Image (cartoon, rainbow, N blue to C red):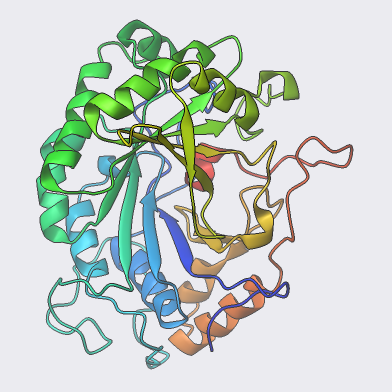
Length: 361
């Protein structure tokens, strides 16, 4: 039975954070004082979670962090993920793969669902979200392992502004090299995410439009959400979808592109057909009604919404020896608790129990 929540939304997208660590300290995400708060699991445990979820109908897996490229073994993890197929759950004996305290090697040969190799079907998609700092050297191995797409976070096209936002000197050139490497090896479409904050980088809107046209990437602007460690968010800091469209229109006219209902971004092309931008507007134009996502944190907890105030410990079941069917039943129950929507900006809004870096972007 495919995963569907109590509001009738099919759950087809999974985001797995494979580390709580990050080598950047972006001002909209981190205070700069806290490091990792939660542990990492062995890749074999993430793989088992993914396999069970793919058996329940998950068709897209996005690897996140923290910064996922900091994890040694991420290329092999992608290779093993690429062997999965959304073609039904095969139960495992209760004593098999019960979770580990230490890293263990991946099984060789069959992946447990009767599939071999790392070819892709049209119905299964593997992506990664990264700050791009380490991507230039890893893009080709990741592509060869079976990665389909890459999204790179980059919040300014001016190197000095970029350094102020990330609090990492001389990082801009590394990220730009990573973006170009992703495009060169075919991690397509390459998306570049920019979180806009009023008074900080809203003057980068038009330069990013130029960047999209010149570099042949999709630039996506994201409204600033209350998910930062410092809890300093206010509505006044949000640069909204309507404002972004107005400012970009001063550069060149935009034409909206039809998009799937479950897509987070509204998509636009420039009038001459060169360059695409997207706008993810959870604050001013929420899209909760068509949400198809669940998340697994680096320590193995399921979160049904970015703004959940609780999480559900899947890895604890694995440690206790649960079978794959037990895990599937637990996941089905958790999905039925998925929130209808977030309450950003409303009087009863309660901040998420974790901040973005500790959830997985």
